[in-house]
Length: 81
Length: 425
Ligand SMILES: Cc1ncc(COP(=O)(O)O)c(C=O)c1O
Image (cartoon, rainbow over all chains, first blue to last red; front, side, top):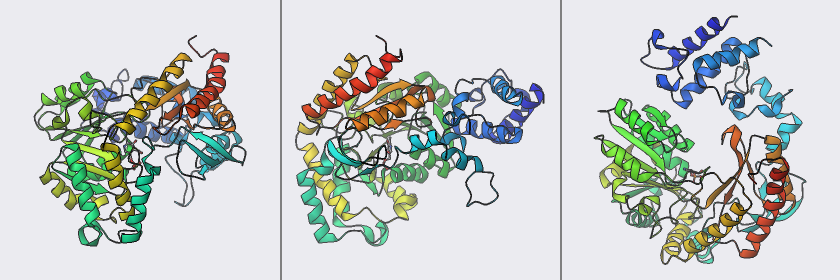
């Protein structure tokens, strides 16, 4: 699985969970908060994406993740294992 | 499970098991890991006596009964065990029986409830008050009862889960601003300008013990029409302000607060919650707030005790003066040990030890064996890099109890952190 494919999964879950967003406005350099997500939305997006990718990463290890791209990188690390 | 300690309750919320009666399969595996069991063994330890500053517990650490100095209970002013409060509750029990036996609207409202609600409204300087059987129910019920789909609820990110749950039920849009960050609050208000907005803050934040920057919150909110302020004074009522009314009084801004919430389970020493506001919105709430409408009224025994508790706490300032004297004494000595107390400004004092869960639990066990009841607070209740102990000061603590508690904290926490190279000095 490529990083772009992982980002596509995250984007899909962002669109499913947040209102009034265009796919084109989701820039991987942005944070979900920038897109208007609250902390519950973020948990939802992260959990749904991990389920879809069949990953389990402890929440404690995601604390320093700021942007959508960084989240994809964390997922890629785990996929590579 | 290999790295079991890296996981927490935050990781098992979703459940893919086929049957709803089965928890997630990896949750079972995780819970049976020996290191995780050690952590969980601290929870639900049994108290065998009243929540006084010295009490007795049945320890899960070694299965023994033990006398402990109690830095955990929310009995901040000692009212739960005050002799006059106990007498009043006994009298209430004799006269009214154990329970209210009815929801407030039909048959659960007693003369005691009406009298106590009137006293609380007067105390908070508001027109009216509604009582709930729990603090959580009060927050859930107020938010769910007042907000509607299309409204916007903006809260400090450190606000209590009951406010989150109330908002989820209401269907209003839920937004969080960074803790005490006014620029962030202003941005959210600007983005939602024109809508009906409620902004929620806490007088004292419960995990950190710091205060809301209320003057700034008021100033920012006043720039936006139809923006009301909700303050949760769970950890500040009866303690802050010249007359003990809370943090809003402390800042002399009571009239700027639209809705004031308090719990009856902490400084009051009982159980229950209350909302004070203008009379029309309280009347409206009584029609739409489920935890009020569809739940039995608070026990008259507890209300009888609480009426006395309010009287004892407000007839002079002696209890809160004692609490602040104890807090000052304790905090100065903790500071002297160079411990990280976060930004505490209240009787809630965190000792932040850092990212190590192992260290947190081993220190908690050592302190308990030495006779100090001070529980670990772990992720996700607090950030993973700021695991902590959280002290509740009490007016009941004697100097001897405080000195012994400080000795144990010095020997276990300060020394442990020094040896791990985690202390500033
Ligand atoms: C800030 C805050 N609000 C509300 C509550 C709920 O109060 P209660 O425990 O009385 O239900 C608590 C305590 O748990 C709290 O800390």
